[in-house]
Length: 113
Length: 111
Image 1 (cartoon, chains in turn green, orange):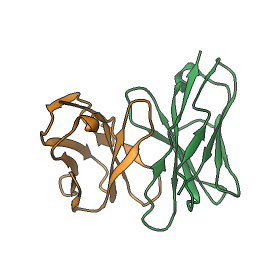
Image 2 (cartoon, rainbow over the protein chains, first blue to last red):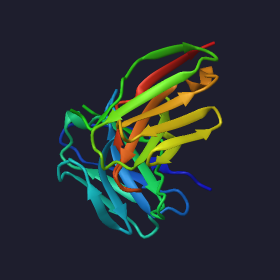
Image 3 (cartoon, helix red, strand yellow):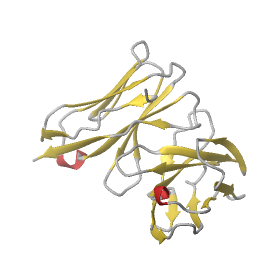
């Protein structure tokens, strides 16, 4: 069984740029959730995708957007990067079967200069 | 008041000690409660998943949920240096939806 994978591992961008982060869900999972974890904080929910549709969104501005593909992999896009966007971005997958434990990937560390 | 409160520590214990980690919450709609372990610069790893009130045991780990007090706990018996990590509590009102996390408690177990 393949776990959740994310790419890239880390990247550095400058203010105003755009970034795309990628996530492959665990085998058998059809739901992907994205979280932002600032240093010293718990993860904060950005949004969730289920069967290629957004299935819930946290308190993040529209410049945070996402996609889910037919193979259930997902992308997180962030436009007009700000310094405060520097964080660990985590992807979690789940099965939407009623128990629905969420399993996290290793994360992408984004630094905005 | 934040929805989930968790003392960030740090908590330092000797090897073999019993560790107690706790979270309180304010939203009575929460039904599913989780504990994750996160090593430095890694993603969170699911340790315990509990529905509603009661106890759940898995090896050296015991999770307790007291919904009447809005209080959850994780106990680690015979703690090991490899248990040194940040422990995050998380909860949600509906399985599979947005998890609300505490800030995490940093635990250090010395040999």
